[in-house]
Length: 519
Image (tube, rainbow, N blue to C red; front, top):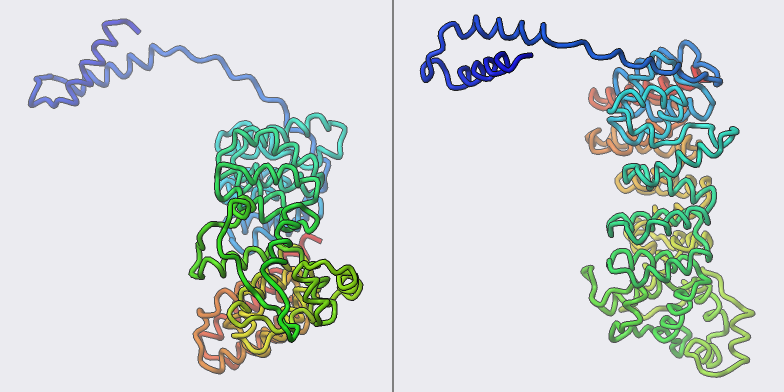
């Protein structure tokens, strides 16, 4: 295009912006049309782009036709409840996504990060091939192709994984680290060490959380060093992880502090004297100098010490008879015979909890024990603390305010059984967090308790939406066989409850059909 033409086009733009009332420009539109045609005629065609390599071969079996139709529907509706389960099931069963739905699948995963791992795995190598051609799908390139580790191209899989860690979004990096720790804890720790010094404080905090996967004493040197981190939250998280390792040096230091804070009274009860101050060593071990909660400082310090002390400490030191010998062993007085007796006759968690505790500090002791049971994954202590329940209010106190945390330590069958009894006794008002800990499908006793509680709520005139959380969990976890019983409840319910219960039954039937299509 000549300079004159370019200048003319610039003049036309200026005239249009200023307006013909400020600068006379006869025939402006005609000249603009002529200039536009001249500009287009002067363009030279660009070289044809190189034809991309063909999509890689897909060796996995294709989806059954009904499952393809179901996936198309779920993607079109962007179903928040059904799509995640469908993707997880299809991936586990080894299917490949149909080529015609790859764009919609990659779009859905771009909008919802919770779908990405399963969606990219289902899309496979073809999904990676397609994502390379669209910048909006670039996230998929940071997730390793499914199956690469099992193929000959292990070097390529390592390159993919390294790319995720070096270039991925933060959520993708956390997911990658968690999966690596699950498979190879030492490799995960080495990966975190490689970039630790350059990570932001808020990122270091969540990366430390990922170390809970495969946590062991091999992580202790790294976590001890993190106790000196410049970020307060990183220091406290490192201390919490170390307290989950009863054999760590930090756990031993906490046990020594517990020994100084708790002695026996003359009746064999636990006489509690919390620390008067939080010294530098306590602060280095993750205890804040002032209470960040509504409790007083001494109560807070006591709770932190008890939560970080190995639970075996209490069983061993309270196992000896409640006599002068036992009091001497707990107070640290030199008496080899009493120490041996305490070690040999280690107390059960139930017998420790049965001992009287100084009333002013009883809640702090029990809450600390509950937190320790969760950190140390001690099912015996969790079971004993849950068994102390004497009604709903006492359950919150005896279990450190959150029975769901203790339930998470127990086997799934036991979790469901305890929750079924709780729902039968107290209804659904406090049950949501408990139900979330119970994996699907729920066993008969829990399913029956939940359905009975729903029937009672409907009969009492409660609003259905006040139980929306429980109903959402029920959609995911009730067995499909419960649908006819729910239909029967809906038939005798008010219009609001009938609608909610009918939708619940329909969702169960839809899930059943959906999974059958993937068989």
